[in-house]
Length: 496
Image (cartoon, rainbow, N blue to C red):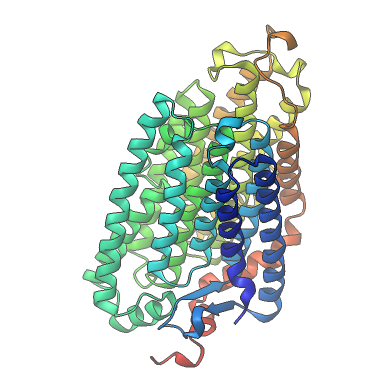
């Protein structure tokens, strides 16, 4: 029992509730939001050290042992994702201070932001599938309000579509949970793993697994991503960035957790299906990124390509593939937030997102231009930046599993991603400068700090990958060996 496990959920929810009471005190809300994300980072770092030395940490709420009570489980996989979530959240908050506007700040932006983080962290750390549903809903309800905060016509239009899609997926999620409970009599992940292994994963059980895959694919933007480009492009930059960095990743986390711990007995069915969906997602996302000449659209389609690429490694179900997926997942959370903040800053300065209306920005903002260039190379997996190592491992994993077509599509779409993102760089920063400082619609004051922090992190993750290698290996070992998770959660209750 380790009380540190619950802190990534408790800290943001308490801070958010205090902020609701002190709605008018913007300075207090800013302080509490930054303090909360830093406190979560410190708690998670301590947790990671404990997991590295003592193994998976658990907390059984109310003293009720699993599988009868509610369990919180922090393994290396979930803890690394919570740490990255805290870093990305801090940078998006610093960006929001100078860009979100007083009206949104006084209309519960910061409490909603922290409630969103509560849902994300809760999803990563919960030990049973029903509480995963609950945490999903906490995250989604906060995102419903954040996406429509400001009340513009396009925001309301896209938010209705976003809410309807998520209500349907939540209904399907409940149906899948009901079927699973009826067949196994438990909802605890560790206990589910044992029960599914006992009854076998054939026929109806595989159908339930595919139903979960459909639900999580809707959340992650895996193949069923038709709602994503519009929904992620209409909110203000700080909100779009946190959505791009975190929301699809929660769906990806759920797919990895469920299909490595519970439904891993028929990989020739479930994991091949994940591979096919990943391949189609990468191709369609890359085509969208290349086809559009609008910064927001190009960036959102690149989110979709990233989802497909991460799950290509999961589909291979090899140690190399899973290692690549984890490296790439961490990289993708950082670089997607970075590239969205950079894109938002360009739009903030020029007042437009259309590439053909912007030119020569690097003469006025060289720092912004070169950081965009680094982010573009990192996003495309160019060595030695952060995306390279994950790309190599995922490709090795797909080849080792015999999925040469999947690895080939991953490499091909990487070239399309590079083209799409360099198209932004060449059009926005190169060429004739027709904009002067007097004609700019905004300023970069205060915006460069979070962008600079994320740029340094993406460079460090590439050059210093050896520094996190042991932790990634620890996380992958836990994913490829479900008995470690089961023993940590159930302990002496293994036979129940």
